[in-house]
Structures are given as C-alpha cells and as structure tokens.
Amino acid sequence: MKTRFWNIFILMILTITFNVLGQMPQQPKFLVINGLKEDAGYVFQEKSFEELMHQPGGIGDYDIKSMAATKTRAEQALQKIKQLIESGTAETESIEIAGEKMRLGELSERVFEIHRDASKVVVLNQLTQNGVGSKTYVEIIASGKTKRDAFGDPLDGAKIYSDGLLKAVAEAQTLGFPEDYKINITGHDFTIAELREMAIYVSNATKQLKAEQLAALAAKDAPFLQVLTGDKARIFKSEFGGMDGQWECFGSGGTVLSTPVAMKGATVWFTYGNSRGIIDTWHITGYRFQGDKLVGKISRSGFGLKPSAGNFR
Image (tube, rainbow, N blue to C red; front, side):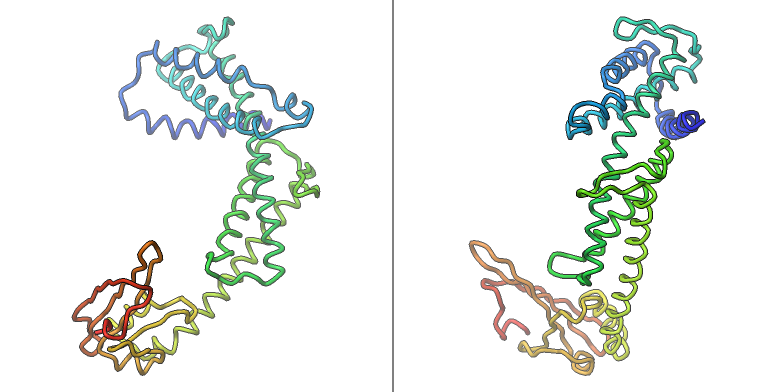
C-alpha cells in the first residue's frame, strides 16, 4: 500500500514537471527512448537500500552522494517514461536496457523501486544532518546564548535545521520508516518520533524567542519613533531601527545624536562605515532635512578608518 502511495506521489511531482516541459516542442520518440536507456542503465547499476545497509561499514559519504545522483537520474527516467506513455506508447512495448529487454510498464516499476531506495538513503542523510543541527540548537537555546552578535542571529540557523528536520521526518514516513526507527545523532540513538518532537520543540522555542527579541528591539526604537515624523521616521527605521541601539548617528561637525530630541532637532544626520585593506577607507552617508522632510542626500569618502569632524558637513 505504501509503495503504491509513493508511486502516486512521484507521478504527481512528475506531472507538475511534465506540464511545465509540455509547453516546449516534444522530442522525437527515438530521442526520448535513447535518453531513457541512458538514465535507466545508470540507475540499474546502483545497490539496493538493503545491500547498502548491510555492507561492511554501513552507508558512507560516497554512497550518499551516489544515491543522490541515482535519485535524480531515476526521476529523469520516470519523466521520460511518462512522456512516452502520454504520447501514445503502450506499456507493453519492449525496450532493451543494458542487454535486457523489458516492457515499458515493467521498466517503470523497477525504476520506481530504485528511486524509492535512493530516496531512503537521501532522507536518512537529511535526518542525520538536520538532527545534528537541531540537537545543537537545543543546547544553544538552553544556554540562553540566542542573541544576535557579529556573526548573525543564531535563531536563523535554528529555524533552518528544525524546518529541515520536520520535512525529512515527513518524507521518511512517506517512505515507510516506522516511528521507532532509530537514527544515531552524535553518539545517541533517536527514534523518528523523537526527532519530530525535537524539531517541534526547536521550532516553537525559536518562534517564541524571535517574538521576544522583536519586542525588545521595538521597545528600544519606540522613544525615537514616538518623536520622529515624516522622512525622519522613515529613515530612522531603515538606517537604525531593529539594531538594538547598536548604532551611531552624527550631526553637523560630528556631534553625536543619541537622543530622540537631538535627532528631531538636527537638520542633518550622518552615519559612516569603513573598510580595512592595503589602504583603509571610510564612507559617509548623510541626510539633510527641512523639518521632517528629506531635502538632500550626502555621500563622501576618504582615507583612514574614521572621518574627521570636518567631513560631517
């Protein structure tokens, strides 16, 4: 029953692909068959899932890469089979693959099975990789070290791994892996059910922490946005908003504008960045206002890591 479901699932994917490709002129039948022979000949050389699982040392990196390629070639073969059938080729028509004659329908079933085996290997790798990542973020969340730093926001990685793990668990179930099937993650065995539970925890914790962080950032920006209006409010949001107060704004002559009142009263705002290299350089971006309306922009560059006060004009 599950094999039939998987076959239907793959046919749905191929139907979407074929419908897109169907807008192009159809290849001559002999070209489709030649391509099918190449794809099928490639996938028929692959070991079965059971053979890989019981080989000395188990499934290695080479096997994972090989099976990923086999999965792709099997999908290409199935696409060509579908193309032949929909163009009127009978499922009983014989095709010779690697010296063996077989009916198109039989070929389809064999390629389906190989695709299924390749998908199992690919999804086991996805479960392992995303399981390792999710487990790492369980520890990071527990440590409380989830604040954005110079290397970025760690919660972005947590979302990537938890989403990837949930997707891999869903595909593993489609492929027939039982809930109690065990995957070794950094020396510990996790069942499929436990991996799902871990992914849901990381996903929910990430959402909650993100919401708390956004609320904290909004609270830092609120005093400024309560005072600033018009273009000043817009530019504040784009240049300084959401930065947890870790920004610098300068007025004329390099005066630091650090309060809402100071920024509201200033007729010009400056910010700058720098670049280290064989020759260090800085670059100033400035905004000139009349009231709360932007009336001009300023761009100025020079040598060194920090511009002198005279450059803020």
